[in-house]
Length: 89
Image 1 (cartoon, helix red, strand yellow):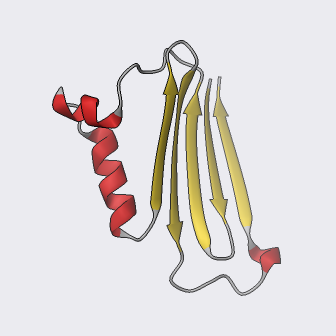
Image 2 (cartoon, helix red, strand yellow):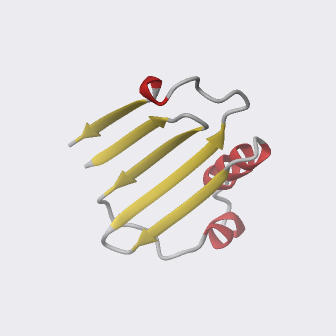
């Protein structure tokens, strides 16, 4: 299963992508040393916008990647926030 959560809040946008796959044994830095740059590129792009990036993975339990970017102009009202969830099974 893959789950994508897109949460557009009052002052930030957060995207969470998680799966229940095989997970990883390596850290982001170790992955980069072996030539895997996709996650590093995601982190750099998010942090360049003043956001935060989190990677969590456990072997045989899946992986979760979270990116949160602050909005330069806050949403005018809490009622206008939206959340979308997409699950692929």
